[in-house]
Amino acid sequence: MRHRLLAPLLACLATTLATPARAEGASGTEHLFEFAKSGHTVISEQEIRLPGTAEPHLVVVERSDDGIGLSLWQSWAPGRYRLRWRSEKSPGDEALPLAEIAVGSRRALRLDVFEDSPDEELHRVRLFLLEATGSREIFAGEYRVVHSEEDAGRVPRPELRLGPSRPGLSVAEGVEGMPALTLRTEEKRVLLLGKTGPTAAIIGARETSYRYHEQTYRLASTREANFLCPVAATPQGPPETAAASDGDVGTEWTFAPPSEKEKPTLSLRLPEGSAVRALRIVPGCAADEARWRKHGRLIRLSLRLDDKTTLAIDRHGSPEGEVFGSADFALPGKSFALQTLVVLSRRIPAQRLTLTVEALEPGADPAAGGCLAEVTVLDAPSSPDEGR
Image 1 (cartoon, rainbow, N blue to C red):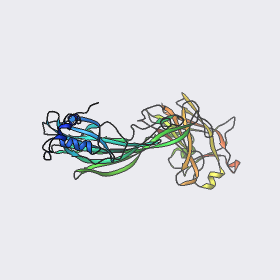
Image 2: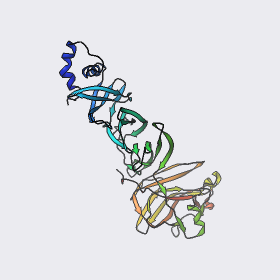
Image 3: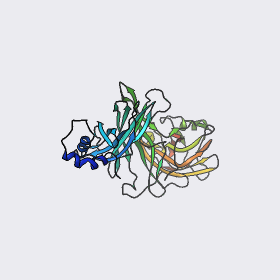
Image 4: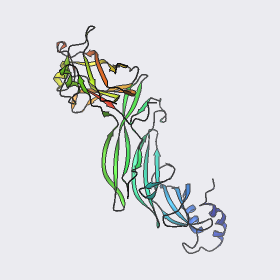
């Protein structure tokens, strides 16, 4: 590909070397010669028109030893360009295609440069506001993209994305003036045991918001976005079972161990239009360490959704059916206890959930029976896929 910026240099280079140098800015040739001598190379270029101007400009994505940046060139004669502005460089090996985006009622260029490693890409994204006098930087931030196991050269594993979008920069739409920016900097992954081995689920992300103030974007807030949202559940049945779904891990439902004749059962009513994507289970008494060890803890259970779908869950075994994966995690603030996350392969509509205890991990006192501190029904209403 022959770039318009360098084509005049090739045509005029012999003349430039054979004639005295002109005054700075008197012609474009000196600037083009300087471009070549400075060690820059052109990655891409595109023609733009600055606000309130009629003459065309070229914006060039350029590479040097310092990294990748932008330069702006003004056309002053057919095929002749004069350098007007050059940005600082972003460290990086590659760049995503340069994009012109709307920032409120104004236009900006988005430059996204990244460094690639076997495990991840580190992106540095910058916004340059287009003005009649040229361009100026109004935002700079970083985000990370983790490679899949296959891209990293390892054995592929199934991965489930429960959130609406990937890391990167987004601009609020439909806002007058300069809108807020949101930078999703990294995703929260959890490793689960799947049907054929390890799996992963993306259950959240870190998001940073920026507001425009004094000619640039400044940090406004940072938050952890959770893709799994609790579903309000109303206990049905004996009053003592209510403690297992009240949102308090310090309360509990105790019961006799399951037998062939009778198995402990917890029934929950969900709001109309609900769906189940995951469950968080605290499978024992979490009020204190003594009770955690004394009572039996759930190890196998079954779930029935609306009398249509039955799911078998084994905390120590491979999942089956509609269960994508599960794993035990530490329970915050309770170093002696744990919680189990069960993720389903898809959102399953349901208004009633029935949990049946199938087997217990014995506690220190067999006569104490089993215990369940909490069951939280979770949905991911913005999940874009069903696993891959």
